[in-house]
Image 1 (tube, rainbow, N blue to C red):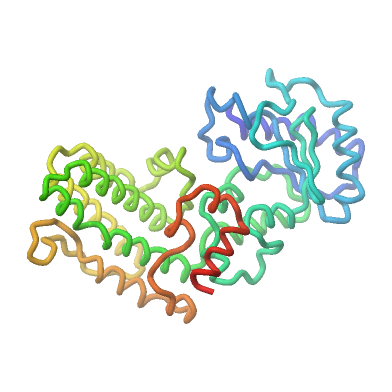
Image 2 (tube, rainbow, N blue to C red):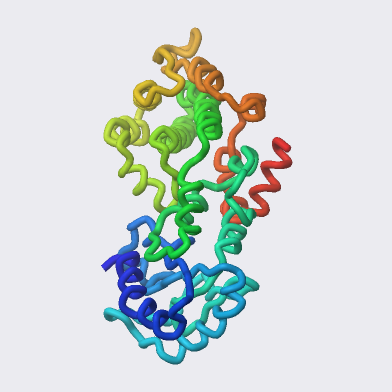
Length: 355
């Protein structure tokens, strides 16, 4: 059994009946969000050695949290079973310690935690409300953090506040999305000719490295065109394989990575770019006429990326976003985990870049 289903049953069979008995009028949300391979359905036997097991996050309003959370955590420690469906419920060897803070409460004895919605938002995004988010704030949200908050599952939601927050964060606003697409094309534009140039001078390793970077850029663009958040590196390829566009791209990307000649790498990547362009045209947003051919007078196969960038940029309506340099959002300017995982650092970085 995978972790989401285990936690869903744990809530239904153990936590919910107990809450009905000890706090029958307590309005709450119950979910499993925030971290863990099970949020994406990618957990397996290896996942069980850490951050895995029957876990439930109870979301309360601040006043209800202050009145009930710590008492309920302590009381559940006295009555919780040692295991559920063959899995121990105690806190395993985990990099994430039990919740403990002004608006978070948990215990080593079990996987039941209490939080406020505002604290969860602050911990993920450095905001306490998802109302009236600015474009700059959106650009500073790491996709892996957005995915961790909107994936997983909600088991119960009395007031609907958690579900509403997840719906608002389900995907980027259109103009932010278009800006990210333009910037992703810009990333491809910067290096697409270098696969051939490095190979031409005999730097086969350098050509391969650049090709691998461009494969990753193609994959990131695929998530954008399918309006899906990209996960962090461990599950990046697994999640990509589930995208509708993946079938059209996999052959080209594998060839780009495995080819022994730089000409084959460049041709395979150009075929992948063409598939991206076709997908962009098919979704009816910022279409352009893709042309694959030599890079000016040099024998490196590329695509007319500048036309793609111009088409996408022209479709942006928000004047603030429209005037931004075509540089990128947080994930496009940094892949450092400490930056992506720290919402305060993420927001400061984007404000320094564009603020």
